[in-house]
Image (cartoon, rainbow, N blue to C red; front, side, top):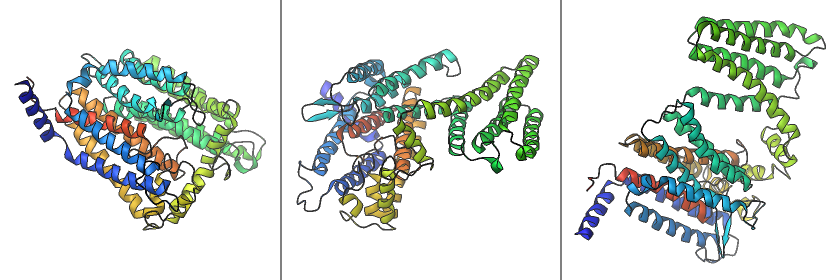
Length: 489
């Protein structure tokens, strides 16, 4: 009887599985293997299926990943809700133990070496953290607007991030910032996301134009523009969150008016930034005054945003120039176009851009890429594998791969929105956020649009840890989705 019941449940699960997502997954694995072949192939190789080659080993990783996905689909979906915290705790212990790992690979202690097998626990910690977040945020009474609850949620993310940073794997740690997209879907105020975007704008504009001066004066264009943006962003926040359009217009026009008037001092040896700083601090004081008069707490938060923006900008500049290691500073300067360093920090990106550009519209064909065959691009079968797609498959092939990822993202949104319980929906958006972050950053760094932080392209980059990690992450969600309408005994 038990066997019969289990068989019926298995049949029900197979009927409820979203096969469109499975097809996209298989397509990505197939194109990924072709790309690994192209990236790792050497002229004269006679057998791309040999286990002595990376393309041959990738078949093993793909086969084990599909088997792992099948096992997850045949498991009980309630297992992941029940043991979410246990799985999270076990992965945290593994991450902590990896910090003291005696094996260093390219300066990182993030790999566990077990004979011929190398595993990276950080790849598996993503699905464990997603499960813990889903469990915690779906508990009765949870409210993301309460600071106590939100702080506990942040702690769930920060713990694995801290352990991964201690393993000297900063790129993998930054992936956990993707969970903020899920927070936004679950009700996190948009002001927090806006603050993050504003911080990026301050950093890029301020650092990029820090040494450019207005009309030969001592006024830095970077500082001048950032401080003006802070004032204008403050006016926008007053409009949206203070619900006071008149005050917002007043702040905006006064800021622009004083800034324009101060430009008349450009002929004098005077730094206009000092006037802008005084204006900004007066603005903070005025917002606090408004908060006391109207008893609206939002003005306090807007004042905190304005003051924090100033301290962030000057603090980031100080850290960049006085705290960061020279090679880290060089990477940022290369990204911002302040340095070229084609033989050093900018070498990978430069060679990758050459490879992609040489592919043209239709590409050079399978195993015919010259940049990749001659090994001009470092890490071309792992972090920079997308350049192989661009060189061998051209613009059309690259666009096709990106469309496949877009199809996966859209499918995940559809599946997440149809979940009957918060646990499934939150986990679905965690999966979506991680995939989005990986694809956006990886493709962006290959094209020279985002920093080189060394994270894999899902289902494409060579290696078992990333492939298993992404497979587990995705198939747990597919199992949760397949069980949404099952009748429980």
